[in-house]
Amino acid sequence: MLKILWFVFKLLWRVLRLVAVILSLTIGFAWRQTLGRSNVYVRRDWNDRGLGRVRWADLYAPQWDTISGGTQVENPLPLLHAYVWCDKVRGNIGHSGAHGPGPHNIKVCMLRDDNSRRIWRRLLDLAGPDRRLELG
Ligand SMILES: [Zn+2]
Image 1 (cartoon, rainbow, N blue to C red):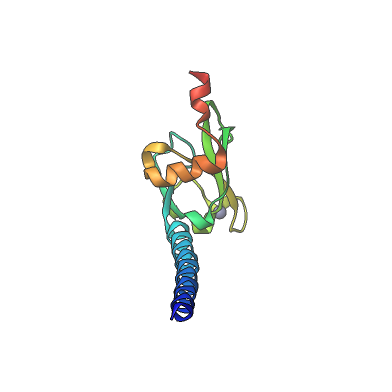
Image 2: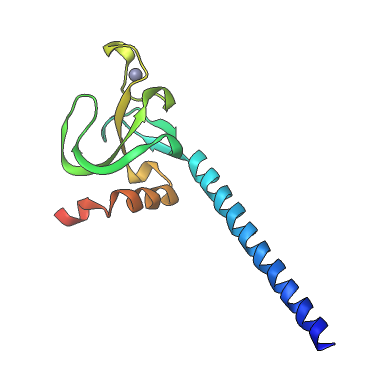
């Protein structure tokens, strides 16, 4: 009798462990999918009125930088920049295909006010803490 109970217990334990593994895999996958499809709002420069929308998965190498893309304006404060292929950007940001056949790898900047908290936290995770605070 005890042996049977033990056997059942062990079997249950294995099933539970299997379920836990499957759950963590599917939730992790779903989370990455959701994040990958999340919108990130980007500008060509912090004072550019045009706002573009890109998918998280299309954004590369987020980093703090003082030089903007395009016209290479130097900002007094470091801003969060990243790279994206211009054909992945929806919306109207200051970029034209005039300088040659596309798509071009363009540098864009992200502002905290344009983006959701979740996206901003993920960006900081990758780029490092807000460097504007160091200058204060
Ligand atoms: Zn382009």
